[in-house]
Image 1 (tube, rainbow, N blue to C red):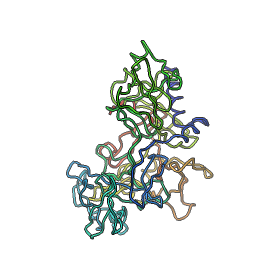
Image 2: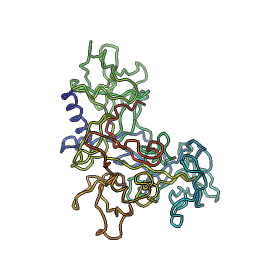
Image 3: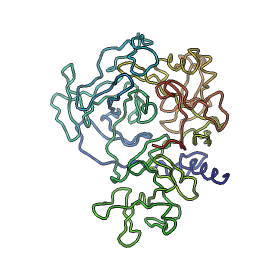
Image 4: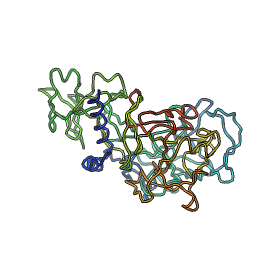
Length: 451
């Protein structure tokens, strides 16, 4: 067991570029998820983001988002495909009652500074003479302007984004799953992968999975474009075979001949397999076997060098220098607009309600910020530092009243006061198990999360 755990933690540290692994860091920086180039209207381009991979942006680098409709427990919100945008320039003032444990009609916090949906998510307005191009179409807004849409969904930018190619406004991960809010997601060109595969975006990176969700592996014993897994090995490690007719090599992908007439997929020259002992989709038990590795098309950016990994009963998490689990805060309000409330520039009442019963001091004790050294340097654009006034949860006017803390996607990260190394006692803390307003561990591998 000790050897197995040591192999697992070493593999995860290398995969996530922890522990000063310079070679792993270089390797992670080299690879990004390949995409299929498609025609786009003037004014759009593709940029490679650290966390989301290839994304569409405007020519000035502002990321472009969709807001696909999602049905919640008491109604739904977001845009319907090919329909008019649901994002209007009218300020919402009350809770809608879609999901919140509170009744509909309660007045929302900080109305004097609350933006309208259009102010928070400016529509991507098309020129009067714009024409549809491929998947890019046009929809009519109520004010008679035309708005760009992609695959039928209206497009927006985010008032939160500040740097070209860095989508801070929305993300594909986090609170949008399950009982989470109706989130905005950055849009991307289709990944350049064979039809037998999908990409599962996680905190650790873009994980390659087979259709149906089975985790994909490579073997250290294989040579470049050569499998050495036969006989008993291939009964446990099932080669992912390529079709005899129609399969085509492409960037990052080759087709090897395992034996006469039998073709197998290889990614970046490594033959691909699934593991027969994985209990189901989303499991990664093959990582526990020496010499076998999960496959990423793009790794997540490296966290601060002093961070560590910890094995817990629920899986493997990112942890601080003392081994305490790192938590990310999720929040989306329950208005018709479903605006985010997880950022220091948004109302803090939601966070205080779940972490301290409305008391900021109690909240700070329960979920301490992960403090960074005053001279700490951000390793990338995804992991940065910021100053926070712990009494307000906001960016302070003067640094003398603040803490210097680590942030993920421009949001502070936290630990939990009751945790010891190896525990995740706040793993489902908050409304709807933390999905709508609460905390989630920064998972590197969720052992029990089958998808």
